[in-house]
Image (cartoon, rainbow, N blue to C red; front, top):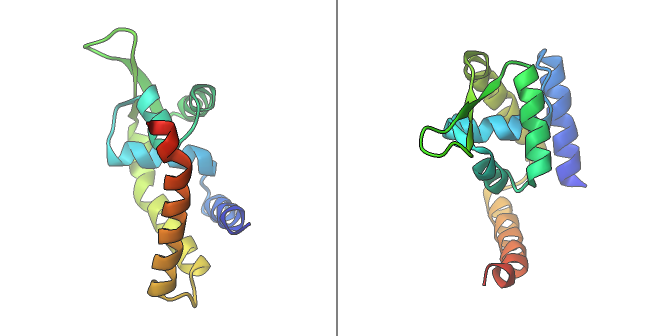
Length: 134
């Protein structure tokens, strides 16, 4: 419920700022801002999404002129997803809005409480994925 509430608020804050991107699209852009020109498979891995979902998100980001697909120079089977100048220009504003949204969500919660929650969620994740990776 908390995750959904944060996502809804972030989406609302993006809209109020005149940004017509979804939270899912923002997550793809976020990973590309960290490292541009990733393969679609790498974006799947980093965003924990399946191939059809990433393909749909990239298609929509292309329609908005925020990313472009480029053929890999080393492997023609691979498309790299790269940021456009328009996406680069929106990075600072979206990160600011995301940080403000998280500050609002975490108001009155101590750093210690946040660390406990992170630790618990990491253990839950590890419990559910360690068997899969072996």
